[in-house]
Amino acid sequence: MRFASILLLAAVGGFLLWGSGDLPQRGDPESPASTGISTYYIQNAYHDSDTPNMVTAVLADYRGFDTFGEAVVVTAAALSCLVILLRRRRREDGSETGVFPDLDGDAPGGAA
Amino acid sequence: MKSLTSHYDSLFLHVVTKAIVPLIQIFALYVITHGHYSPGGGFQGGVMMAASILLLRITLGEASYRRFPREAGLAIAGVATLLFCLLGFASVVFGGNFLEYGMAVPGADPVRLRYWGIFWAEVFIGFLVWGALVAIYDALVTGGVE
Image (cartoon, rainbow over all chains, first blue to last red; front, top):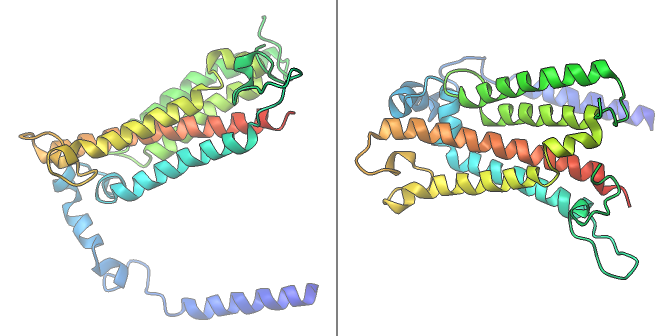
């Protein structure tokens, strides 16, 4: 099993090293990443949005919809944690506590 | 010192925490609001704001819930997400695309509008990351106890 793991690691690593030979040089102006829309961003980000930091301009303006999606994902992650982890507990008389137990005054680590 | 009720009953730790938390928060607000000019922005600054609250949570224990209530994290995250959404729709009202800040106010300079649109987007992102991370921490800490 250990031998198989090492063999698999060497195979995948060798494959990636072999594939990296075809990558363009770093900073190559002829590379596909540098000939597309990024040229427009570099030349126009400041004039379009008065923002010296073009990363911020791309993040919040040109790609604002993508960033909005990220923001919603972060909020959804917090909501999911609360829904999954904060279980309603059943009291002695059969009624249930709220989602925030300390609002009901019977939290395990509630009001100090 | 009535707040020495956490599991770290060290006077030094409490004093240093109370001294350093405002500095962390000031720097976090700086990172959020200077996303235009320097590396950083909403996500990074929001994480730093959350880190300052988690420092309070870890050192002060229960006493920190009086400074930052358990419900506040999710409330901040939700309100900030809603405001970000409304910011996006501000331009839709006047015929622009969603999040097309340049169309948000008719007659105003679109370049300045995009500048302020980016600024407010960063602020809302910072606040929602702050609230969401604190909410996740609180859920992890309190949720496991039956």
